[in-house]
Image 1 (cartoon, rainbow, N blue to C red):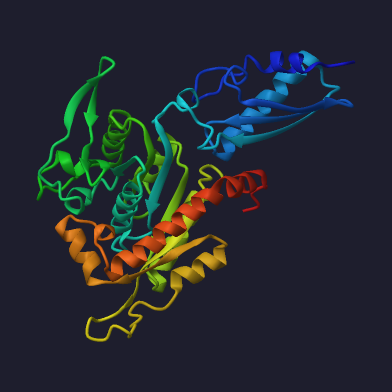
Image 2: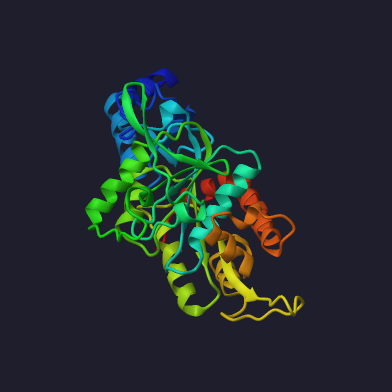
Length: 367
């Protein structure tokens, strides 16, 4: 029995991509590799990169082909996530105008995750990229302070008949934070569902427009907000921030493990080691490793994850964050040298990410 490629497409044309609400053939998500010798070999793309979503799509395609063509044909299907560079308005339901969505996470608080997030966002904007930042740290929002926009309030704008929240723009970055909707000294005391609802509103009702990067500053730990983020938006990848000491590294390892769960499967762009050493002004050649030496770098090596650089414990980084002028904007300072190195390493790993992602998702998970 001879089978045409057209008959295979017809068999798959009734399968609806769950997130995009259109059939996978009209969306261009089906690639027929070969049809011969009793075998049909396909590559199918899906919006949700999670293992369970890819398995459901594979089963649906196998069933559709066998129902129309017959069980005598062997069907080989590789299901891959839609790459960030492949997504257009039709292939992304949430944040269709954003090319890359980067989560910055840490296993524990106090390791400098927000400092890394803010300087990454501002550094990318400084290079000419269109950048947004979502401060998703619901219980401890710091973006308003670090961008010097504590007293700003986002406006409501009408776009295509819908009221949207206009991000506050500072240093070339569009910023939204729950901190804009609470008084400076007011504690945000919300249960998980309330926090998740507020976060989804910032994502879906923000007037983000077209962006090259959206940096998402996650709260510390692994909880409701993290699950909401990975379920709500198609993350391109995640950055893990840690200090060198063992207690922080143990939590950082848990953060990596969360993103690598089969049900989540978000690529790790790399690990950043913050507060790597202290150098006093009086002894500029001296380095004091207060929290241990190369702990996060060694963790990255052990986990075979890229290392994005050391950020030393420098007074100017702390002062610039408190003053609302990110350190990466400062000229000729030690802090900007290390931050520029981190930014260069980040861009290098972003260029390599499509190759790393394909290798990751096609290998079976043996955990």
